[in-house]
Image (cartoon, rainbow, N blue to C red):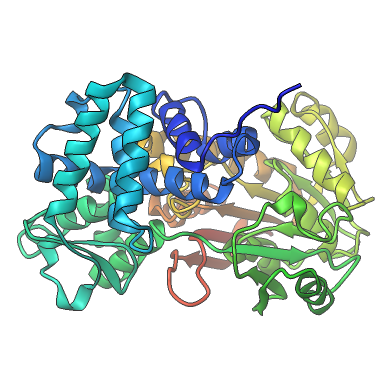
Length: 457
């Protein structure tokens, strides 16, 4: 029987971009589902996430350099063009002729010779206007350089971006393919320098961090195991490990044995601030996929009583899978429909962990499609859900107990304002710790997020 032919990384990338355009889920889920269809999963991942992170800038370059607006280009070829332009602008190490030729071949398959000719013309037009694919941003005219890293970018011979001096918000919005309302919020809240850093971090290629399962190993032993299996890595703060290159997580040495969990350092901060006690009874109310749930178990030497649930039944299965893989005994997963019964039988709780649904504005690098779906109205809706969860937690935590509230958002409405409103209406609670982390692209990169520790009198 003839083996099924694998797709190239570019072919799969274009297919998944079409799926993402149709709103058929998150790109991370799509890559996990279809990644085995290619022998170039890293290239496919890079193109898909890169296009989604930089779509506005790419579309602007297409229109400025070649004429047609992207919304007037056939659905059959627009993502082929975007993938090609992405590589021309943001991947200077890839030869230009290979990028153009591959795109033309894809267009032939998708739409025939006429479409292939059109794709070739658009990409050649963009290519002609590029002066330097790897210019130092400090030396390039701001309107003519699309930033790729905090230090470098792609310079054109025409103006691509708005005037930075006239409207910084508009400039940053176009340069980093972020909604203007979001950039405006960041400028107001954090100032121009911190806002720029958050923009760069939202478009970075995020690092892959590992949290060792301290019940089975240590950071040093796990690092030695990785190195011995030719996985380059380095230790970072809080006993975590950063992998030097992309890897298929499930194929890493030690994964099947439950030696580690993938987690960004900022996401790990909430449980570190909480410092859960070994004899504590903990309810994790928004547990899926279980990253913080399992962190709670490890932090308490697997001796606490941890009850975990989530309103999303499908994602709740991930919690069970992770608990099983890590061989944890202290975690009990239960259906959200049984919450009232569990609270009546097991409550009140010494701690309630609320890793609430949020806008994900601190993790835009990892969830690039979010920038095209989030809106001020969506943030307000999420804030109402978060408040309901906080009110629920207030009822089921015992006296002197703790609510650990966390988000992967950097919006004030979901963080500081949310906590202030809760404290105003719940005078028995006090704020012990509050930590906002903005995403970072330089050195050891990390995501943005927020955590607050609230204690009941």
